[in-house]
Length: 388
Length: 231
Image (cartoon, rainbow over the protein chains, first blue to last red):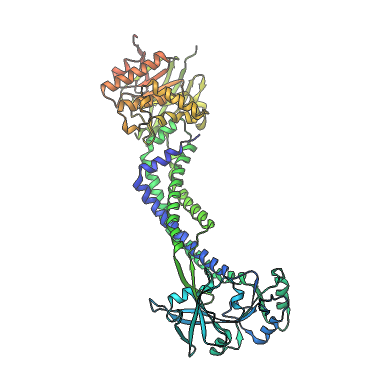
C-alpha cells in the first residue's frame, strides 16, 4: 500500500486558498473548453434533428445546400412520378417542391439586421415534418401572401409576430401563424407558399424537392435511380444526413476555435498548478524525508504528489463543468456559414463532453504535477530530513 | 549470539565544492541485541551520519554494516526502503509527524507497508498508543498536542511494527526538562521491558546517562574509551 489518499486530500484542504485559486484557474479553462464543445454539439444536434431519415432531399448535383441548389420544374415533375414516394392521408404523394430564399429582417430589441431563411412550401410540407407544431394561428393558404413564422423568429424580429406584416420583395406578407419546431433548424425559418415566393423573387426553379419514402430501406435504390437518370442533374440525400452535413463546417470551426482557445488558456493553468505543486513539495521536504525513512518507496511519493495534482485538476474540472452546465439554459443564434442565414440553437451537454472535459482537467493536473512529483520522489532522504 | 549491529571498517565522506570532507574514518562497532547505546560527541563529529548509516538512510563509502545478519550496504534502494519499514523505528528531534494526519494515522503509516488487514492495523496502533499512554488522544492532530505528546506519538510510530532496532536522533533536543524526562523514561522502559535495541545520538549528558553504554565520536573517529552506566 502507498501513502494514503487522505494525505493528498488533506494537504490540499490545508492549503485551501491556494488550492481554490489554482482549481479556479483550471475551472475557467474547462468552462471555456466545455462551452465551445457544447456550442458545437448544440449546433450539430439542432441541424441533425432537423431532418428525418424517412425523408429524402433532392438538390442539384454538386450543391451543398438548398440555397445554392436549383431544381427546374421539369426535373421536379420527373421526381414526382417515382412510385417509391409515400402517399399521404389525402391520397396525394407526400412530396413538396420547396424554394429557399434569404431575406434580411430587423431585430426587435437591437434593431440589428439579420439574414433569415424563407422557405417556400407546398401542400405536403407540414405533413412531411411532423415535428413542427402550429402553436398559434393557422397554416398559410396556398396562392396568397400569407406566412407562418417559427417561434424564435416571431419573438425576436420586427413584423414577424402573429397578425403582423412583413415587407419584402415589393409586397406585404401577413403572418397568420406561429409554429414551434423544437430544437431544429426550422425554428429559425419563415414559411410561405412556394409559388408566391418564386414569383416575387423571379425564380424559375425550386431549391429542392422533399419526399417521404414508402419504405425507408428503398433509399439506396431511389438514390441510384435519380442519380443515374440521364434527364436529371440531381442528387438524393436522406434529410437527416443532409442537415448533418450542413452542420459539419460550423461545428468543426467551433471545435477548432474552442480547442485553440483552451490550449492557450491551459498553458496558464498548467503553470499555476506547477507553481502550486512545487510550493507544496518545497514546504513538505521534511515530510517527504520522513515518509521515505519510514520505508515508503520513491514511487509511493511520486504517486502521492501526482494524485494531489490530479485531485486539483479534478476539482477544477468539476467546478468548470458545473458552471458550464448552466449554459444549457441559454439559447444562442448565429450565422450558419453554409446557408448565410440565422440559426438559433442551445448549448448541449453530452456524456462525451463531460468525459472529455474531465479528462482534459486531469491532464492539466498531471502535466502541472508531474515535475514537482518527480522532484519530490528524487529527494535525498538525509537532506530532506535536515529541512525540518 | 552475534551482535545485532556489526559495523566493519566503515568510512564516509561528503563533498564540499571540490573538496572531500571525511566524516567517519574506519569505524568498527558492535551493538548487542537489547542494548541501549548513546552516541555522543561535538557537532560535526559524525554521530548523526553514523546513525543514518545504521538506519540505512545513507550509503557508506567503504566498509560493511550488518544488521540482524543482513549486509545492508549491499541492498538496492527499493530493498533498503523495504528493509527500513520492517527493521528500523525512527525517533527524530523534531518528531517529524505528518501534520495533516491524526495521531492514529501517523502511527498507522508504517503499518501501511505491511500486509496487515485494517482491523489488525487498528489493534497494533491502539496497542502502540497505549504503551506511550496516548490512547485517548488518537484523533488529535499533531498541532493539537504538546511537544512531549508529539514525541510520544513518534515513539508509538517507531515501535508499532516491532522493529529490530530503534534509532533516535536527539530525541529530547526540542523538549523541556519534564517532557524530556518522560521521553527518556519511556525509552528506558522500552529497552528494559520490551528488550528493544536503542541507538541514540545526543548532546545532552542527562539523556546519555539513561543509556547503558556511551560511545564518543570525535572528528570522525570512534574513541575506544566507552563508559558503561550502572543500572
